[in-house]
Structure formats: structure tokens, C-alpha cells
Amino acid sequence: MTWETVIGLEVHVQLSTKSKLFSGAPIAYGALPNTQACAIDLGLPGVLPVLNQEAVRMAVKFGLSIDAEINYRSVFARKNYFYPDLPKGYQISQFDLPIVQKGCIDILLNNDVEKRIGVTRAHLEEDAGKSLHDVLPGGMSGIDLNRAGTPLLEIVSEPDLRSAKEAVAYLKVLHSLVRYLDICDGNMQEGSFRCDANVSVRRAGDPKLGTRAEIKNINSFRFVEKAINYEIERQINILEDDGQIIQETRLYDADKNETRSMRSKEEANDYRYFPDPDLLPVVLTEDFVKSVRDNLPELPHQKRTRFHKDYNLSEYEANILSGTKEMADYFEKLSQLSQPKLAANWMLGELAASLNKNSLDITQSPITPENFAGLLNRIADQTLSHNIAKKVFEIMWETQKSADIIIQEENLQQVTDTTAMTEMIKTIIANNPEQYAQYRAGKDKLFGFFVGQVMKAMGGKANPAQLNTLLKDLLPREI
Image 1 (cartoon, helix red, strand yellow):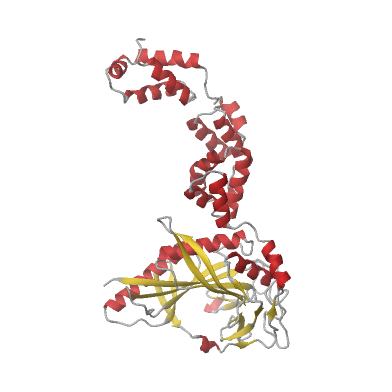
Image 2 (cartoon, rainbow, N blue to C red; image 1 turned 90 degrees about the vertical axis):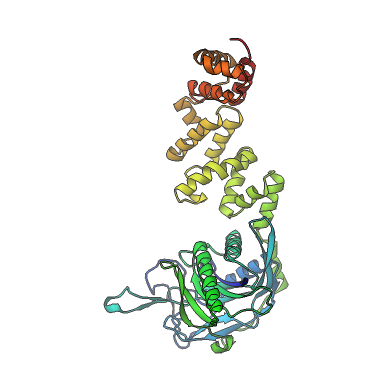
């Protein structure tokens, strides 16, 4: 039996405002418990929420970036449920009239084909506090309300995703976008960008959706893929054994690589949504939306297209180098100071390998774009061969010295003196008469042997192009 997977994602993006959605309390990750919660966040009687305009601006900014409909009138509602980290007994969210709806995000699949994923809605809501277990003596739990009231933008996709890999591709595009827009730092470890995955399976060709399970609060791309793949297999096994899928909320256990039941899945009516009586409808003006639109930055897909066109990069190179704002900025600075194509090759080669090896991102690179450009310019003007340049790069990584200083200190200038190279070639031929005779007899593969011997004798500093030209001229002759 062939099964089809259907996935929809709900992504919670913590907005990078200075204060909370409905209070003036600050937002700073890692502060001491309950030091950033005011009377409004604590849900004390008589307090009134006041909407953070900057959060509204960020939501509109996101909506415009995905060509979504912006609702000029949106409404906040109370989502009622009882949990220790929700002191009011309800969460202020948006239900019937969200601020953003009906947008789309394009993802690139492995075969370089684009797929469009619909975005149902993006609505503003406040975050809850956090329950802390196993941190207090006697097995007691604690409640930290620092996070309560933090502004979230919940982005809900259509059920257009058909595999865990597609889900990860969508998340990566979304993650890049919110960072380009500067509305979220995207820190998944700190919970700034987290995902709930709704997963179901159905028989291939069946138009009816299967019963879904929601996997809550997955905070890494790797865990998203693992959790979804596990859940797909779990559901298929149940259905093939003539069982039934229960609509429920599940948690992913990364240590055991499995999902486990948390609670039965609630429907919207279980939350008894109703308009919040303390908050007026949000009414946007044309001028407000226009000002946000006029100040949109260059978006990832726009930058990718420009890199491909202006810098003559391949689609692959342009896609990787525009993947994050920080990577794109580094490349742009480097390209202004050196040859763009050479810059792309070295960034995707030596620099990427060193960053991965040391678990660093581009903002932590010990080689600045200015220093990197100095190295690339010495390659371009043939001061350095490619192999010697790799050696200089390694020293730059360790010492943060400029390429010119390293070249001078290590005496690494490329040899371009054809007279010196000619004499060395003759010496190598004289020292290897057997190989020379075999080459003259037609064993052309020995050309590489002579290249290697001359390079070794000259400390790798011979100009490769000149060396090849001289060898092609001298080897066929009688020496």
C-alpha cells in the first residue's frame, strides 16, 4: 500500500521588540526568573493591556514580504485554557480576524524545482510563561513568568508539505526571511523560532485528509526532520495493522528519537474564543502600510537573483551565499574588494570547511572580509599559487595576520622566473632518465609526475601555468 504524507506547520516567531506585546516589561533571554514580569504579565486584577505598535509593524512587514493579504482591521481574542504558566487563565491571541492571511513561500527542492507553499495566516499573540521542573528541592516545580507576554507571530502554513525534507526546506526559508526582515533573531536554542508540526498520512490518491497528530515545540531543523519521519512511520504502522489514528498532541523525545502522547488534541471551540473586551480592534491606515512597504529590505529571493545576475554565480552558489543575511553581507563586502567569482569559490570551499570544522557561523569567522580580500588579490595577481594560498589561509585563520605579512614572513611568493624554472626542469629530467624515456616513448601520464617533482623541488611556489607551458615545450626535446 502506497501512503502519502500531509504536513502543515505552525511556526512561532518571537518578535525582536524591546518590550512585551501588551506591557512595558523588558525582554531579555536568560534573566533571573520572574524579574521581567510586571503586573500585566502576572495577570493581577484591574490591569489593562496596551498594544505594542512595533509588534504590529513587524507583523505587517512579514505579511508584505510573502505577498499576503494585510487585514486593515484585525481583532484580538481571548483563548481560554488553564495552565500554571498562564496566570490570567487565558492567552490574548487572534482568531477570526488575523492581521495577515493568504500568503505564500517558495521553497527549492533537491532537483532545483521550486514549490510554492501556502501560508494560511500569521497572527499576533502573547507567549505564556514557563514551567520549570526538577530545579527546586523536594521535586517541586516552579513557574517563571519572564516569557509571559512576549510578542509572537504565529505563522500557519497550508497542508502543502509532503515530506520531512520539504518541511525542513520551508522552515529554513522562513528562518532566513525573518532574520532578513530583522523581526526575529531566529535563535532556536533559546526558543525564538520554534515549530509545531501537524502530520497525517492518507492512501495515495485519496482526497480526504487523514487524522492528524500535532508534534509540539520542536526547536531544531534536525529534530523537525527526525520527529516527522518517526511520526509518519508510526501512523503508517498503525493503519496497516487496521488501527485508527487518534487526534492528539504529541511531544518529541530527542534522546529516544520518538514521539509520545501528551494530550488529546483540542478543537477551536474547546478554547471558547471571544473578542478581548479590553482591546479595541486594530485598524491600520494606508499610510502606515505604505511606510512599512517602502522600508522593506532586499529579500532573500531577490538577493539570490541579483547574485546570479550581477556576479555571474551559479544558481547553487547564489542560493548558498544568500541563505543568511550575515553570509550575504560577508560576500558583498568581499566582492567589493576582490573578484566576485573567486570570492564565491573560496567562501564555499576553504572558508565554509573551516567554519564547519570549528562549529562557527560566518559572524564568528576569524578572517575578516578585508583580510580575505588581501589573500584573493594575491591569487589573482599570481603572487600565490592555489596550493600555497591554502597554506596562507590556514595561517590567517590561526593568527589573523594579513596575507601580505604572512607571504613576507614565510617567503611564499610564487616563482614566475622562467629561467629558474627552466633550469629546475632540466635538473629534474636529468635525475629521472627512466621516466623521461617512458614519457618520450608515449607514456603521457608521466607529465603529472614531472609537474609534481618540479613543484616539490621549488617548494610549491612555481607558477602552475608557466610550469605547464615550459614542461610541454621541454619534455619532447632532447635534453
